Image 1 (tube, rainbow, N blue to C red):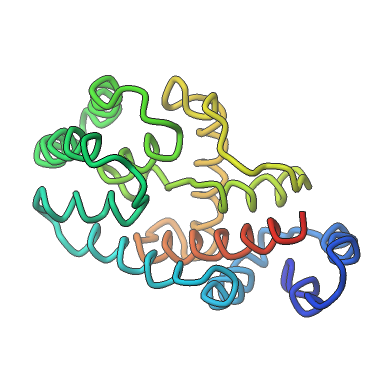
Image 2 (image 1 turned 90 degrees about the vertical axis):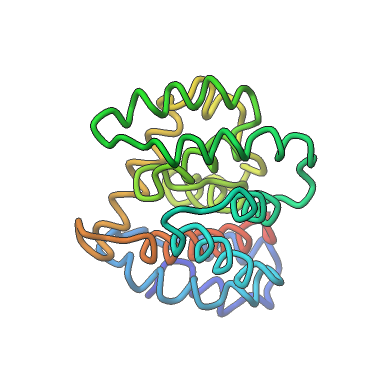
Length: 217
């Protein structure tokens, strides 16, 4: 049985009964492909409008080798429409400058300097901006895929936000543990030559599952 599917199939039950079903599930990494194929395809049912937004964000990011300032601005606004324009306008030129000067030989130093210029912008946007520079090195995180991650790895329902200490300083052990887990799963899903398409599939599945988890908390 696909992890979480039995609970989904019994979504008409009370939250308490659904949690009992979820707690009886056993996560098997070898079944990750089935998990992704199922949960990524029910996302539009569980979080209205999210599927189109994710597809659009990933497409803008990864189909433009040399994105313009406007494209970066669009992606940041789609990620979080409530982010203040003055902050987006400050960060966009920083991102563009670093994208234009990526040196894979010194990628870790580049991300360290990049983080210094970004400043304290919160855990979700910190990771998101690093993802823009290295989309197969730093998987994005938000409250929904974080909720899925914590439930799958720790069996807990009670993670509604990504804690600030998860990425402060960046990268720290909290984010690195998530990143390694995410990369392991996408590698199982599509091998070591995975692409951003495969990362998007896993991200969509986790967001979908995380949104379902939050409904029965």
